[in-house]
Amino acid sequence: MRLQNKVALITGGGGGIGRATAELFAREGARVVVVDINQETGTETVRLVQEAGGDAFFVQADVSRAADCERMVAEAEARYGQLNVLFNNAGIMHSQDDDAVHTDEAIWDLTMAINLKGVFLGCKYGIPALRRAGGGSIINTASFVALLGAATPQIAYTASKGGVLALTRELAVVHAREGIRVNALCPGPLRTEMLMRFLDTEEKRQRRLVHIPMGRFGEAREMAYAALYLASDESSYVTGAEFVVDGGITAAYVTPE
Ligand code: NAD
Image (cartoon, rainbow, N blue to C red):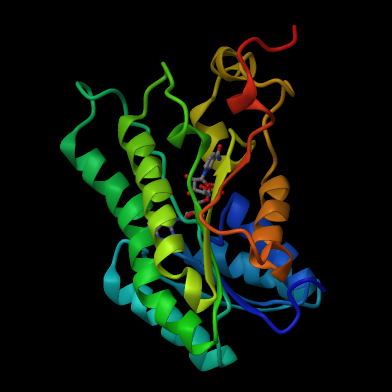
């Protein structure tokens, strides 16, 4: 029960990492606010948590909209009385996101609005709630592509995740003496809906797998365990970190055959 007596809000809670984290956080004693733009998948996560004996409820919100972010935090406090953990995890990877020449401005704007402004807005409304609770932990989902360039470009996605890292670092410093810790989770490529929809041929998958020392994609569950550590008091001296969980990708030059 590593999150006993804590309330955690998870955006993108209807999907891979968000759902696995909601289930794990609830098993560890947290009351969980599941936020997603998709009502169907979000309520399904709540059902799964409740079926396992956990406590959760759903808030439909678009993280790129300020009013929605303000409301999701207000609903969390109204229902559970406090907010201790904020997991800004919602994100998109658009199929038309490409290199600078081939990416439409609209795709750039949409990606930035959700992946980067969404994290800013979560913090804008979440930090006052964490203050009211006497401190807390913020986890922002970035990506290994914030640290490495890829010749299979997704320029808006990559730039948005680089922004998440910079934003996380500064927030960590600004709020360090208020008992609010802010860390970025940098997942490697995962076997979730988001990436597998995109890597729809064996050739595309192999193009990535060759760079992964472990030779496999990560699992949402493996990100949830990392988020659990960052959410819990066990990480009480960890702030401003780029918490890389990537099967060794960022450590590798040549990988095993
Ligand atoms: P996913 O697509 O399974 O889940 C993302 C969830 O976010 C979905 O449920 C979706 O409905 C929700 N969402 C999308 N736009 C939203 C919005 N505007 N407001 C609220 N919710 C919204 O993907 P995932 O793999 O679980 O990704 C979660 C996070 O991890 C994302 O930020 C993603 O960029 C990041 N990430 C993923 C990978 C990967 O390989 N899958 C790697 C590195 C980082």
